[in-house]
Amino acid sequence: MIINILFFFLLGIIAGSFLNCCLYRLAKKVPLWGRSFCPHCRKKIWNRDLIPLLSFLRLKGNCRFCKKPIGKPYFFIELVTGILFALVFIKYGAFSWFLVRDLFFISTLLLILIFDWRHYLILDKIIWPAFFISLIGNWVLGIVRRGNYRCRVFRRSISVVSSKMGGLG
Ligand SMILES: [Zn+2]
Image 1 (cartoon, rainbow, N blue to C red):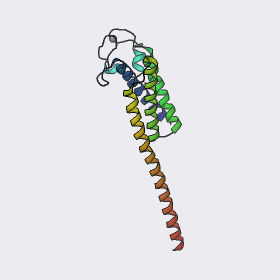
Image 2: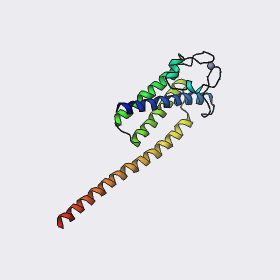
Image 3: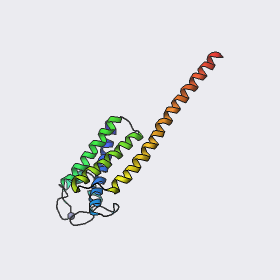
């Protein structure tokens, strides 16, 4: 259980790191793909400096090259996302597609919340994809849940029928 919680915490801080990247790039209107760079000197960040939380602590929150501060929010967004991911896992207690859906909801809501907080804007390019992914995701999960229920009912009726037949025989 502890290892699973740790796994979801780590997954959360990686997601938080991606959220930081999205928040910066959406604000600056630059493409979401491409290597991470320092917002001050624009030098590309080395792979070993991309480790969420740890790189921030090791470099004391400053850029390796220009030594300017990267900003504490980067660290806290990663930490909070990690904690929320771990809490969602604790709520479910095991892996399920509903857990994946909730992790997606949390990431999207954090993105909307922080972007709105910083820029007083809720972007259509976040809302619409999130809306359609949620709609399709919930529809598919509804089918999965109904499917599992039907399977269980079917299996139970088969076992009842076969036991009766066994009794008759
Ligand atoms: Zn720099």
